[in-house]
Image (tube, helix red, strand yellow):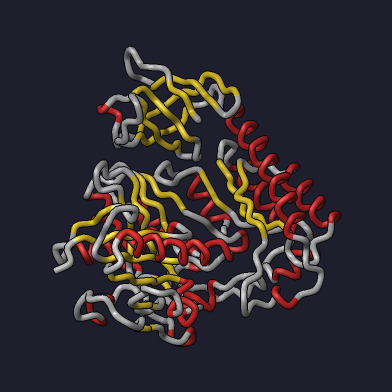
Length: 442
């Protein structure tokens, strides 16, 4: 009887929360969870299909697992499984492929975990992807941060993106169920709850509620905790949400807002739902209302038709915006997307060169943002891990902070005055605590 399972996640925080839920199903049936690099009886790979590299990594992981245990049962689920089940079925040693509707139904679909000659494929057509699978992932040891899935799917038609095909239409968790699960997480001791989804800002489109109204109800839950939004589209980040964040300390003073390009021409080709000037107005409105807000940005380099001028427009646009850091992606051709047929393909070397330029800009932005924190008091949530006498945590506005390990600070929202910053390193002291030890943010 198999008793060890290894799970591995590729891609976004939403995938991590779903993998955690799958893992809990195994735990409830007496399995022991081990690291995917160890020998296991069952391997579950939750995949991504945003870039070609994620698909290549999935194939490599399956082969590595079978080198560790040739008789292991291998299950592949996630976006890659939904979009390319035939491709995965040709990988020798894969036993079952589960689509987006089926990923939480492994134990209903499989009677035993015996090795198979051919892969079993359970993948529903994209047009039928209308189920909502609740999920959350947690750091069970310290009960510090929890990723909580409240939304799935996307109705947007960005020309580069496969997610609507992989996850189906936008749908949300019932608001009463959200609040019930949210209360459980708070009562369990989690001090930061990160709301995740494919398009979190679209929450509630099938209910008489929107994201702002849900956040308002969450902040009314008793207890000491804070809420972080994983990512929100610029056209869905309302003034009401910004105002709530400014006024309520249960809301993290941090937004991650995808841009993708600062070039009006490229934004139009991408079929994004805003203009560059709209984005600029939004960022400046946030900083005017919340001066110490941390703001992250997603951006893609090398999209078809992106000339040197278009790239410079993006670079200069971001250079002049008061944002804190960038997540930079190199454009990757995705089958069945509109962009893959567009003219003006950018050489792969040039894509990577532009990526590196924006990464350098990101480091400059982050350094400048950290330097702005000198003299400010930040709220930091310290984690339990002891790394050679050092503990770490995040501030409300997403500054990473480290401290000489002190068990009394674990899972506590501590006020920290930042004293000095240099090259993304900030020193500070706990506010209101005698004999406080210097802190370092990194």
